[in-house]
Amino acid sequence: MTIAVHIRFTDDTTDPAINSHYQCLLLLATKYPGHHFIFIFDKTYPPGLITQKNITALLLPPQIKNPLLQHYWYNFKIPGLLNKYNADHFISNGPVCSLRTNIAQTMMLNDLSFLDKKNLYTAGEVRYIKKYFKKFIVKATTIAVTNQQVRNVLAGMYPLIIDKIRLIGYGIKDVSVLPEYEAQENSRNKYADGKSYFLAFITDVTIQHTIILLKAFSAFKKRQLSNMQLILLVSSTQKEGFIPDFHLYKYRDDVKIIIPANGQEEQEIIAAAYTAVYLPAINMLETKGLTVLANNVPLLTIENDFCKSLYHEAALYSPADEKKLAERMMLLYKDENLRNNLLHAGRSIAAAYTWELMAGKLALSLLDTATQTA
Image 1: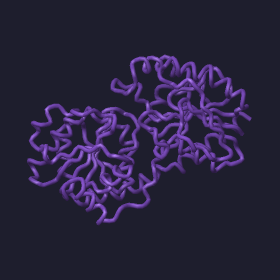
Image 2: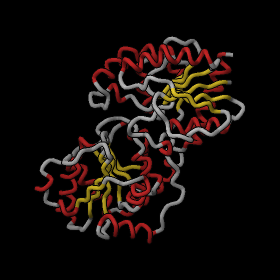
Image 3: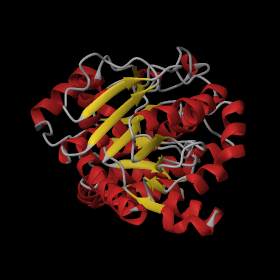
Image 4: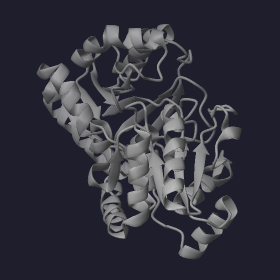
């Protein structure tokens, strides 16, 4: 069986070690050495990335930079390549597929954020996806989704395609070896003046809730009179001065703004946190919250169906409201039983988000498709 896959490294997932799509398919190729996999890249990929004998790596220009190029790439470049290599199956990357090939296709769908008013897509991308999305899901043989909420919404929109939907989950980088207390203490000394700290992630997905977070932290400090600090772990895509009038913020000396130099530094900061606060303003799948659970750190996040479908009982939830958020922060500060319950549930939930499990479920979907089309 020849399986062609679009492997896409976007600007924020250029590291193969954290690209779940790539890691999942790499494991799949390892598990099934008798099958031929074609990894198709639309932009230059790291040298030495592909070493397995049953994987053929191909660079297929042009690089996808806008909807027009994406349409051309998927509907005119991909069909010819699939025919050339006699592919039996094509796995797309994102809410798209090829409308001009008759081979079986799996559309991998992380989320449905393009349907929300707040999203990270350009206006042109949203128009394009909304125009063709129904055609894509009708054309796709199977639709592989990451969580139950995406499945529910998709099935509600298009009931007739419910049998196509496969829940395959998602994978995150393994964090099997956690630091000892001494290492965590060293991290607190290094990053937070030796004090305990709340950790918050500032990304394209969460930045809209930064002011709410700071106001909640202010309320927490006023009520608790503790020396607790707040570390803002900022993604490299954010610009300086993303907090208006920060110099006027009363507790600015207790707030540390850090852009991690590498994955190791980010890992150190996460593992030593007292509690992590992840406040997405967009229902878009990021690995931040899942990584928190894997690091055995309590998670406080936004209360909505999308987050609950990811974290279940392993997180404490709050509306996007400064008073409610402050109450939850104080609750985590005071209630040791609550923290322990969250940690216990978090370990269980995080164990389900592995590349191995994701690859296994995708393999079952592919085998099921092959049986149906045989």
